[in-house]
Length: 349
Image 1: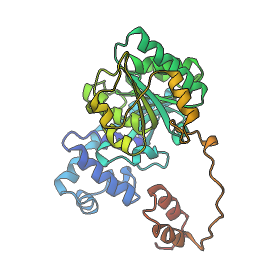
Image 2: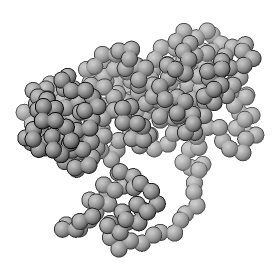
Image 3: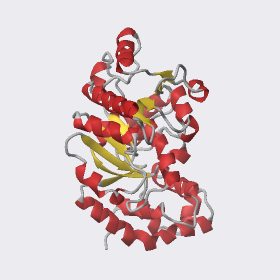
Image 4: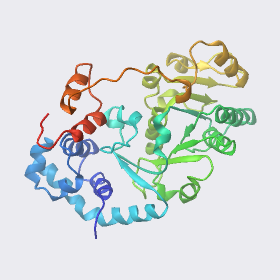
């Protein structure tokens, strides 16, 4: 059986004898720094892997045991392909930039997806909150989602029970684009797989193995991936505090706009105020704030945030481009790769 590169990634990241951080370190060194494939890694000797990836020979031998999982991984990928689903890996240019900026421990090294990854080039908005909302909270979630959809924002969620699901379904019904980040493998949710690409459900993502069942720890950890894709998040009557939303305070410090609604509450809980959440009383409140504020509360769509054209900068070759860009700070990984690929044969950096 011939194996795709995606099958090698799935098999490597499923090795039970190694901690995930060690596997990631090997894949980063081999693929992102060494510009080699995981398929090449599986053909290499343990000693070469250990030297190139700065791991022990025993750890290198352990990663090679993933060869026995390749057939199962490929069968799962073949079934996903029949649904039109694919895999994007950490080494791919299409890997979501917002996830690439996360700390290493939070980055999924692959995501199984169906739909249009280009949707993620702009920040989305999340409407999240209570698992069992009352009628007022449920109605507000639906009205807010419909309003956001009509404003051209895409909604990001996990399709969890309650506010999250109500908002996604309302936005979809209103024709607004939606993105779901699931807490289980895509093959565990065939109804959503079938619906993706039809109407407004633009993109279905899972950072887990195709057949992985839903687990509570996965569901909570995946919340960081949802918020990473957002420019704003609304929490309506949340039944959990910010401690159950990984990295939410870091995202808020980085520019994520947080809004919170609680029925009849005069003030927000201190733990939410501490991370910068602002009170949200209803659509009228949001519409007024949008009109009165010089700085928009929600992420601007690309057509609304056009920058003036800058004059082009000429470079003699890709080597000079990398050197010049390096003077202004770290050269983005994907850009550097494109520039390296553009070097004439025989050139060196």
